[in-house]
Amino acid sequence: MRRLIIFALFIIHLAIPLASGEAAVSVGLSLDRTEATRVDSVRVTVRVSGSRKTQADPVVKGLENFIVRQGGTSSRVEIINGKVTSGIDYTYYLQAKKEGTYKIGPAEVQIDGKSFLSQSHTLKVKKPAASEDSRGNLFLTAEISANEVYVEEQTRYVLKLYSRTGIRDISLNLPEPEHLKLNQLGKPRNYQTVYNGREYEVLEVRYAVVSSNEGSYIIGPASMNMTVFETGNHRRRSVFDDPFFSFSAGRPISVASDPVNMSVHPLPAAGKPIGFSGLVGQFTMESDLDPGTVTAGESATLTVRVRGQGNVQRIPDLTITELKDAKTYADQPVLNVKQAETGLQGEKTMKWALVPETKGRLEIPQMKLSFFNPKAKTYETLTTPLHILSVRSPDREQTVAAGPAPEPEGISVKIDKKEIEALGRDILPIHMSMKNLTAPSRIFTNRVFIFGMLLGPIFLYMVAFFTLKIRRQKADTQAATRSKKAARKFYRQCSEKGLSHQDLMDALRNYLNNRFSLSIGVLTSDEAAGMMRSMKVDPDIIETLRSMVQLLENAVYTGNGHLKTDQAHAFLDLVKDIEKEIR
Image 1 (cartoon, rainbow, N blue to C red):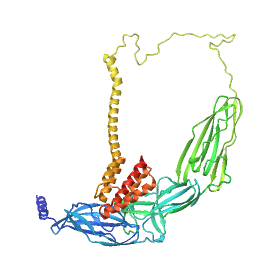
Image 2 (image 1 turned 90 degrees about the horizontal axis):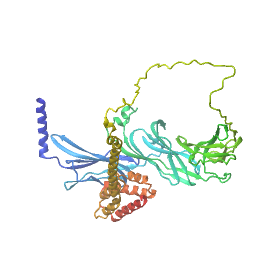
Image 3 (image 1 turned 135 degrees about the vertical axis):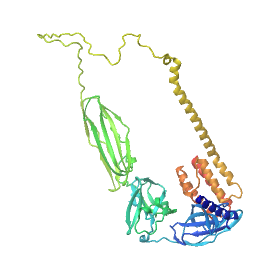
Image 4 (image 1 turned 45 degrees about the horizontal axis):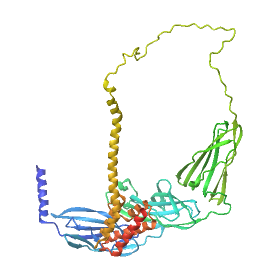
C-alpha cells in the first residue's frame, strides 16, 4: 500500500509540470572535437530541446566540403528541478574532403511553422602525418607482388587494414582499372602483427591481377567503410574492448590506400612457338596409358594431365594424331581451378579411349604443349613420352556339346535312390486350391476406388501447381508493370516546379526501387554505384551516378534550397543513359 501511495504521488508530481507546458524551444549544435585530420570522422550533434517533433530534419550550414553520413536520432525526456523538458538529438558524422578551417553551423530547425537557429563552431582540418611512425590507430595499405609483368602474367594485389580499435560493418570499394582483371584469392585473413613497434590487428584481402593489354596502369586507391568503436587509452587490450561489450555508439569512418603503379610488357616475339595458345605461367604435364596390353577390339585409356599456376583458363585442349588400325574416342576435358595464396592454380585432365583393330605393337604419338615462363622470360615446351600398346589376337571360341558326360570304360557307378521325404513345413500356409484365395473386402476391387487412388494425388498436385503459378505470374506482372512505369514516373516528378534536393532524392530512390524491384530505405552513393555495377552498366555512367548522388546527399544535409533547372535535367539525362544500358 505504501508503494502505491508513493507511485501515485510521483505521477501527480510529474503531471503538474506537463499540464503547465514544456520549456521553451531551443536548438544547440556541438562537435566532439575542434581539430581533426582529413581521415578522421567528426561527430556533430544537433540538440533540440522543448519539443520532440520537428517538421523536417535540421539543416546545417557549412557542410559543402565534407562527406556527410547520418548517425541516427534519439528522443529524450528530462526532469530538472521539477520541470519536464523533452527533446530530440540528431547525429551526423563528417569527413573532410580537403584541409582547411571551416565554420560549422548554424543548424536551422522548423517547429510549428517557426524557425530556430543554433550557434556555430569552427573546425580545423589538418593534413595527416606523412611519417609512417606517426600513422594512427586505423589505416589501409595496398601493395603488389610485381610492378613489372608481362601480358597475361599473374601478380598479386594485397590490401591490409591495420587497426588498434574495435571495428565492425566493414565494406570494401575496389578500384576498377581498365584492362585489368581482379580475382579474389581465398577468404580474408585476420592476424596480429607489429608495425613500427606497435601491435595491430590486420585484415588482409588478396587478389590475382591479370592484364590483357600491354601498357602502364595505375590501380587507384581502394577504400574501406566501417564503424569504429574507440576503446580509450588502455595499456593492454582486454575482452571488454570488443564492440560486443561496448555500450557507446560507434562512428562511421572511411580509410583509403595509396595508388599502385603497374607496367605490362608484351610477350616477346622471338622464340614464340607455332600455334602458341597464350598460356603464361609455370606448368607441368604427365601422361599415362592403362592398361599396357589389350586384346584386339578392347579399349585402353590414355590420360594426359596439365597442371600449374598462371592463366590456367588458357590451357588448350590437346589432340591426338590419327592412329593406323585403331579408333580413338576423346572424352570431355575437365578443368579444375582453385584459389591459392600465391595465385590461381589449375589442373586440366584429358582422356582418350583407344580401340586397336589388329594385333601387334601400337605406338601412341607424343603430344606437345608450349607456354611462356615469365620467371625465366622464355618459351618452354612440354612433351609426353612415347607410349607403346601391346595388342593380342582374340582367343578362339570353344563350343561344348550339352549332355551327360560319358562314363569311363570298365567303371560302373551304382546310385541308390531314396524316396522323397518332407523335412518341414513353410512358415506361410500353402494353399492347395483356389477356394481359399478370397478378398477380405470388395471395396479394394472397385474400379472407381482404384482410379481414385491412382489419379487423386495427380489431380491435387496439378491444382496446387497451377494455383501457385497464377499467383507468381500475377506478382511478376505487377513488378514488371512498376518496372516499365518507373522511368516515366521519374521524368514526370523531375518536371515539377519548386523541386527540392530531398524531393529529387526521394524520386531517385523510388525509381530504383520500382525499376529493379528493390526495397531501398536510404539511398547512398556507394549503394547506387554498387547496384549499377551489378547491372553491368558502363563504368563512366556509374562514376557519374556516384558523384551526383554524393552531391545530392551533401545538398540535402546542408539545405542548399531548391534545385536548379540544369541540375534536374542532368538527373533526367543520367536516368535515360541508365535505361539505355540495362535494356
